[in-house]
Structure formats: structure tokens, C-alpha cells
Length: 110
Image (cartoon, rainbow, N blue to C red; front, side):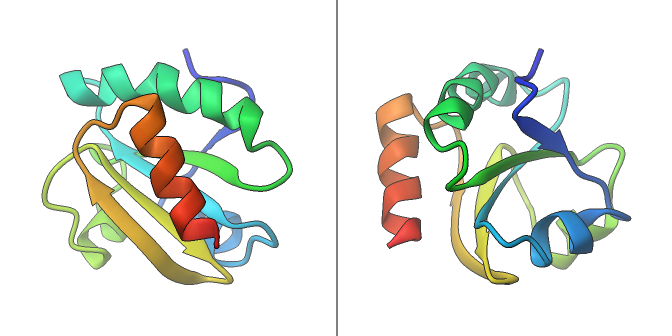
């Protein structure tokens, strides 16, 4: 179960929740059947608390939302993207440990 700090976004809400956000936004593109996606969930839950107020954590189910993943050429999951001021700032695919994801986020937030 994801943290209450992680927002679930859809094709419909992506523009307002991600592109128009005042904070940088991390989007986790995932699916319920994806093992590495399930392993990444608790890592995101932990980091959502660490980055509260600095970075909005979001998740997008690629099975239920096809337009945004297609627009961003999501070919494999999990894929994590960070958007700042409505622009894509960083992308990484595959499972990341907490330390790897922290380093990825910190680099993108510079």
C-alpha cells in the first residue's frame, strides 16, 4: 500500500498534477504485475517522507493509463521521471535501491 504522501495520477490529471505543480514531481510508471515495481514501492514510500515539501511523489499505472506513458516513450517499467517546472529533468528505468534513488533525486533537484 502506498503512502498517503504519494499521489496516484492519471492521463487526465497528469497536466495539473505534474506539469503545473509548484514543486518538482517524481512520477513512477508502474504496473501491479511488475515485480521490480512492487519492490520499488516501499522505497518510494520511505523517500516520500524524506522529501515531503520538496518533491511530490506520484505513481502512474501504465495498464490503466496509456496516453502519457506513450507520449514519454515508456518502454519498460519501472521507469521514474522527474519533472521540474513542467519540463522533464531526469529519467531512469529499472529498480533502484534507496541509496540509488536518493542519489538520482538529489542530482535532478540541483
